[in-house]
Amino acid sequence: MLRKTLFWMLIFSAVVYSQTTSYIEVLKSDVKTQRRALITGAMGLTEEQAQKFWPVYKEYEAEFDKLMDRELELIKKYAENYADLSDEMADVLIKQAMDLDNEQLDLDKKYYAKLKKEIGAKLAAKFRMVDKRINLMINLQVAASVPVIE
Image 1 (cartoon, rainbow, N blue to C red):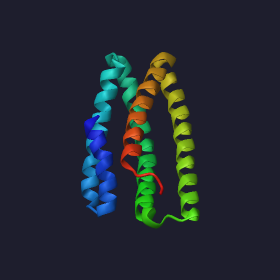
Image 2: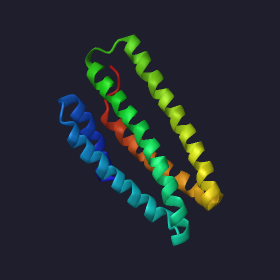
Image 3: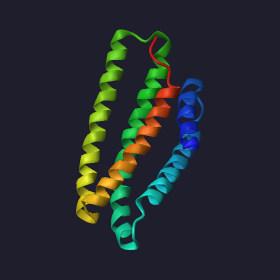
Image 4: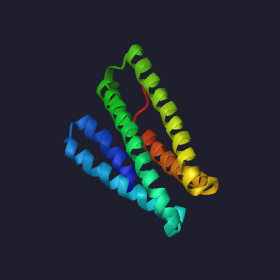
């Protein structure tokens, strides 16, 4: 989790200090690896279950990554406008953030159904719980490193 904390703090720093995109991509790749390791450890899948789980997870991960890229863009916009954030920009940013929250919920529902079909409701629910906890930890770390609107 330390790498994730570092990742999000560095992302915000990179936005503010304009570090290279390739550096951010390396960090994102590291987070992806760490996330998979946490899921692997928590799920405790049999070989048969794993053969069904991981292809669906890869689909989920691809869609999830797109949402996270959009969230990163939102953080960039916020960082770029932080010093002189207008009411209009604040309204735009928070509406986009709420839209992303809704899209994440839709994604969760979609992949819970797919996983339930492949590995059963109990394991699909377990994945949702594990993934949700990972996301909550990341979001808490992001929230702690991004300053509140003045």
